[in-house]
Structure formats: structure tokens, C-alpha cells
Image: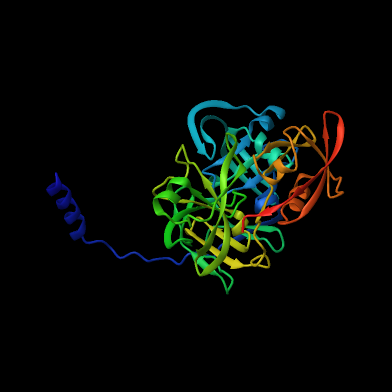
Length: 395
């Protein structure tokens, strides 16, 4: 059989063909421009509509999503028909079968993206984490059709039709491996220096995540540094990870020192180890203005005014979530500052340092200050209590 294949290849090689003119790629065409906002960790949220539904919905813009999706409660609220399938999705938190909303349009300001198939997932945990309704996630199904320019200085997104893109000077062009998700080669350094593949994930509200198996096999981390337990959120709900530091992360020509890193026990091999070691998240990527060009299989990065922002080194061990209009404690890590301050699960947060806004994002920002003494008023069993938490630093 090998001889037959070689013969066929040779036959094609010797058949004369006419020379074909290579046409120059046309210029990328500007389509529209609209704003976005950020949740904690740099996660980007934009507003869009679905089909003929009048209400505006909140979508996370996520290069770590292999499709496009809607929240199950959003589908129920607006009577959007769903169809069960045998399709499974894998994410941090687990593997699950999903239903689909077939052949619906996505309406962005100045742009309608037609004939999309949305898988349906329960994003209640994301809504509780960010304190605002998350109606869906926009991923590969959108990115593959357009060039997406993201400016974190102005909080604006520009969309272009595919074509030759003129990139601004002073940045760098990455050439990730593209499956449904971009995979970028990074250099990481702690106990030693090594290079490895990582997912380029704008939907992850963290700097860097390593699978525990990768960290163990590579022996990348300094053994004297002891990670702390912390709460994280995934597709299937809340889970605990370990949190520590890594001395250096290098993407393209850009180096970042003392980067917070999550260590994830990847029971479902979401990170595709040993092909990739983990993911690079938007708390680091937001330090660049980006042009994400799936059609040309490249990503342009340009450092912005956030490039030298401090990383979040604060540690509290306190898990706060937005539930039924209230901000409540749903996790207290043993022996953490929260535990030592005598917080308990189901405590309702009334104020943080005299901030009574009931705004989860605002409260999280206050708690992201290392080595601070923070006064928090809580309601427990109908009684108000004043608790004091002394934040620590993982640095």
C-alpha cells in the first residue's frame, strides 16, 4: 500500500499545471465599534441581543470557549426553544451533556451574526461570582468569522471583516497554534526555566493556571514556597485550588515578574496535559491592547497603560457570592484570615470599610489589598456583627 501512495504522490508531482496568479489579500474592512466593561480579573463583558428578543443580554468574550453559549435560565425566561443533544462540553469543573439553541442570530451594535448554534449551560455560578447576570459566552463561533480589536485603555471593541490587517507599531505579533482555541508558547521560570504550550484564555479571570500534574512532572515550582488554598469557580460549580507565585512569565518579548498562579487538580484533563500545561488568563492579558485575528491565525499585543499594574497578591480565604440580591459568605478556608476573623458560611455582608453599596465588584476590590485591616459588617441570624479581617499576601 505504501508503494501505491508514493506512486500517486509522484504522479501528481509530474503532471504539469498552469501557473496561477497569487492575488494580494484585500484590506480588512472595519464593521463596527462598541464598548465593553470588565469584571474582576479582567473578564470582558459586552451587551448583545438574540434573535427578536428586545432585552439586551450580557455576554463574556472568551477565547477559551470552543463555541458560543446561552445560560439555561435566560432561555427559560425568554422562552427560547432548546433541543437536547449528545454533545458534551469540558471545562474547569467537569464534563457534561448540553442542549442547543439552533440557528439564532446574535445582534451586536452595528453587526448581526447570523445562523449561530448556541449550546446551553447553567451560568448561575458565574452570575453569583460577578454579582451581575451572565446570559452567555461568546467564543470560537464568533472569533473565527472576524478580526477583533480590543482596547483596554478606552474599553472599546472594534470588529473587522477578515483581510490584511495593519497592526500598530511598538507591539508584537504572536502566532499561536489554533484549534478551536488559541494555544500559545510561553516561557515560565521559578525553580528552573522552561517553555510550554498554554491556552490563551480571555475568559479566565486570573493570570496563570497550571495543572497540578504539569507542575509535578516539570518540577517548575520552588519547593520551599507553600501554596495556600483558595476558592475558584468552574462550569460545574465551585471548587478549591491552590494559589502561589511563579518568578517569571514571558509571552513574546514581554516578561512579568512574581506572577500569581493557580494550581488545578485536573481530574477531567481540561488542560489537555501533556500537550498544554495550563492557561494564560485575562488578569495578565488585560495589560495589552489586543487584535485577535483568527482568520490569519495571529494575535497582536501592544502594552497599554495597565502594563505595570500590580498583580493581586492579597489573600483572605473568604468566598463572597451574590445570591438573591444579597452578598453572602459561601466559603471560609480553614486557618485563613477569614477563618481567624470568625466569618461563617451564610453570613450576609452589609458593608466593607463603610461601603454599603451591596456591589460585589467593589467589595472584592477593597479585599484585594494585602496587609490591610478591613472592617466588615455582617448579618448573622438576624443580628449585626462587626468583624475585622487582616489580609495577607502570597508574595
